[in-house]
Length: 279
Image (tube, rainbow, N blue to C red; front, side, top):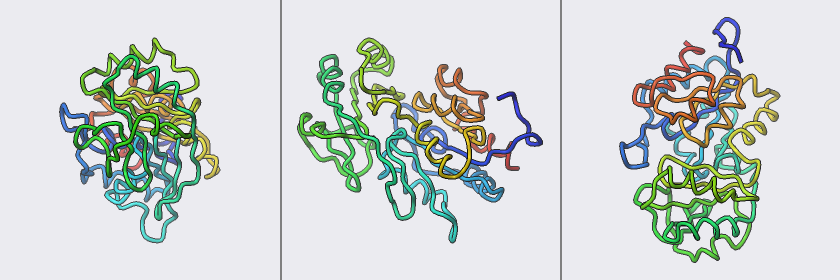
């Protein structure tokens, strides 16, 4: 949309990425501090005070998102349960209690085989809901929430899955971007993270598709949405939203997809953008 002002437009729904948007990255680690700053907490509640719906939208599994809602003190006592878009749009749930209302799944076997041909030492993981992840080998400390259950790769992807994580600690994000583009990975969608971290998902599934489901349920449209994010998995969401805002530290392709850029996560960029609409 053209650059709006608070006099001409106010978001009815705020879609917020978590890591690198609400939570600060631990420099050089690919992990984030599990802390919400007072500035972000207050800005989110200013949006709630104004009547906006707040939706968390993350590549995290549901198991790693409910505690972020708790840190934000959402939903407020007596309010409707939160809508949450997890696993890059493949899982939509309400909270609390955690109730999955939609899950998209796919057959990941061929895509995983192709990736492991290129990166045979890569780690593979699929969520084991409510417990943690089934993993081919242990992931670096702090990168996955919950328990890690050692499982053979063939067994990890034997049935339909909503998301597969492939991680190569010896490679770079650029290596994975080039590999995914070369392979094509037909039958799946994919997104590369900040490190050599690849999320495989069902075709057509993204944070944008998950949020589209939520706005329909709420009687809204994408034009009513302010979305803020910092990662490659936020690109579709930022393009889809009425106003998509990139965090200041995002890579260039995320800035290119957004309508505007705010400050970095270290300078409370999410709070800066929210305060523009909800002073």
